[in-house]
Each structure stands twice: as structure tokens, then as C-alpha cells.
Picture 1 (spheres, rainbow, N blue to C red):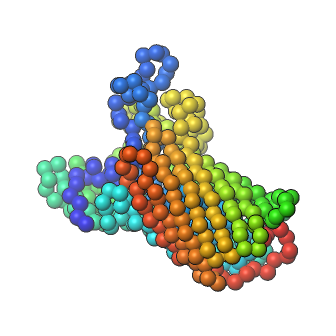
Picture 2: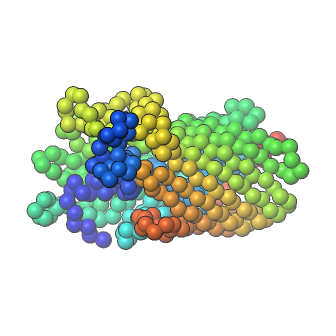
Picture 3: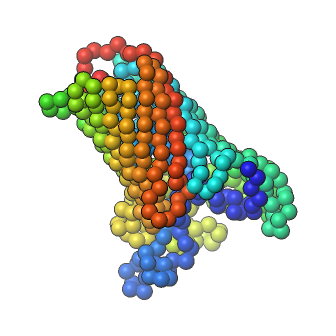
Length: 411
């Protein structure tokens, strides 16, 4: 695919379309009621989505969790656990595992050469410890860059990738923790010159911190209740030009998940889960206040820690808007004889904060150490979404069974 498009539109498309699709209209005005709220000119609530750079870091890469509505914080561990909660890997009963996922992206926009590939794996080197690693690659296809007059100024293949390494261990009989380090690379238009400014590659490091708690329930059947919490993508700011005073934060995220799994009998197992996610970055300020008058809104210049702490209280619409910034998913998984799986889920995001609302379906097949998963995003509502009909494919390999004591918390 060759896309002829002006540079500024490219950056807007790449930054925005990876994450949210209903960005701030830019026309919000302060409510005349004196409430401090911001509204659209027609009186409706202000559409004030949060957009971030390197949003590919938040794309769910694997078919199992995407088939469950993106629920992955507290469900049973597999080789894709690093994306959600690496602490779960310390509970694995396998020697290790690997996974390869492929996601054609933005097919709803008619684009055919944008995709996400994700390779991940882990190794359990003791009963209480595991190491893990992953590579995430996001290709944005072929671009032809033009100036405002339509003259071709260059060609490119924008791409981004992340390399991550994690360490997970038991912190107690039922509590587990993990630390993950990341290197992030973003090449959107490197080598191009716009208005005399050189565009460069952005690079930075980041970290994830996660915990996982699981306890058996006293019921007639074998069942467990699990809680997962993770803070991901904590890292430095990045910029695509040396001349710009603006350096953007990574999409730091707080995820909290609950999962309940139950073995109904020898052949049938069900898992139910729910996840909540909130970006730990500043909410856009509709007033675009710029006290130092450097052309960059003040909310974009907050340091990392103030930005994280302030992300719970800085929305122009107050607590009600903070709640709108929470995205949630619910999902279910059914296994028969540990060989055949059916999955379903639902993901919701406020129409004022991105409007990602969709159902998901998933299918899983497993034979000895090999597994194949497929998921499908079901279009909902009358509004066309760039994510409509998104498919995900995942191939998985498990390596042996780790020798553990007969401990229900490690089964």
C-alpha cells in the first residue's frame, strides 16, 4: 500500500489511531453554568480523549485474552502473561512456554499492511521463580511523504518495537510479584525534514511492576479466586524532534483484574474474569493553559510522578470524568478436556474517551504441547469502528511439567 499524505496528518493518524478514535473535538467551551465543566458548542459533554505516543504498547497481542474481552490480569498464566501481569508466571506448573501472535491492525479502515507481531516466552528455573522475555513489533506499512503542495519529499516504512525481560517470583504461599524492564523504539518518519526540523527516532526505557494473589475456595469443586494488579509502561518521555520543547509520556497504565476459575468435573473447566484499566497520564486540559508561553500546554509538561499521581484528579470534568477514563472488560473461557476452548467477552470505553465498545469471540485448540488460538472482534452499534472484524492468531508451545509439591496454590 502507498499512502500519499502530509506529514502532520501522518503523525496525527499514527499517534491517535493506535489507541483511541474519538479524540477531543478541539471546540469545547467552559459551561456557562459556572460549574467548571467543559461542553461542546451544542451543549453535549466535551469529547476529551486521552491520546499517547507508542500506543502500540497497549494493544492486546494474543488471541486468548482478546477473545475474553481483553481480560488478562488475573486469569491463569501462559506465555503471553508479560503483556498483562508477569507475576502470574511464578505460578506456572510448566517448565516453560513460547507464544507467537499475529494481529492484522485497522482492517476496518481498509488498510492491509499494518500489523502487530508478538513473540514471548518464559522459563521456570525453580518452583518459586521464572524469567520471561518478549519482542513486540508494530509495522505501519509503506508511506509516501508529501509537503503541503503535494510534492513527494520521501518514502518510509514506519515501525515500532519493544524488547522486554522480566523476573517473577513467589512472595508467599499465595502472593507473587514481578519486575519487567523494557526498551522501546519508535520510528515514525525518521530522516524527514518538516519546516526545517529534522524528524528523529524516539528511544527510551520503561518498567512494569505487577503482583498476583491466588487462593483456593472451599467449595464442592476445585476452584480458585485470583487478583492481579499491574502498573505498566513506567518510563521516560520521548520526542521525535530535537527542536520541540514537548516530550511526551509513555502510556503508563494501572490494571486491576479479578478471575474465578472452577473445575466443574474431570473434563469441564470455566473461568470468569473482569479487568479495569486506567491510563496514568494527564487528562487533556480543554483550556490549553500555557503559563510559560512556550507553545506547549502545561498538562503535557508534567514530570512523571506528578503526572501519575495527578491522573486521578486532574480531569476538567471532575470525578465523573475520571470515572469515564476507566476502561473495563469482562470475559469467560470454557475448556473441555483441556483440548478445546470457547471464549467470549465484552470491552467498554466511554464514548467521550475513545468509544471502544465491542464484543469478542475466541476459539482454542490444544494437542499435547501445542496450542492454537483465534479471536474475532464483533462489530457493535451503528457507528463504524477502525477495529471492526479484527482477527488475532496465536500459536503456543508448552515445555514439560515442572515438578512441584502438592500445593493447591501452584496447581
